Figure 1 (cartoon, rainbow, N blue to C red):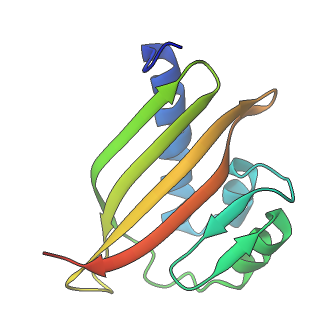
Figure 2 (tube, rainbow, N blue to C red):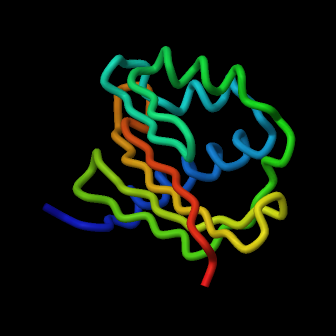
Length: 127
């Protein structure tokens, strides 16, 4: 298996950038399009455990659009072969001073493009 093929990493970086732009803009349609529409797609959030695209969509629809701006740090994307990648980043929000957020996403390539199939978000004290 080839790790970190430059073309694959670039594709996932572009998908990750679309995700980040949609997140801070609260563009729920774009966010929905970036998650694999399947009952097996999982998103563990800061205060929620979401199983399946329906629960993820319901969360996104109900979420407040206030305070979503954030700064990313130490973003790393690692591609495994042609069709799987992991994106990991730290994030900081002015709305949660003294905390650092951690986000990991598993991206898979489908016929219609790269989609998140699993995500985990958590927040801890900044050190």
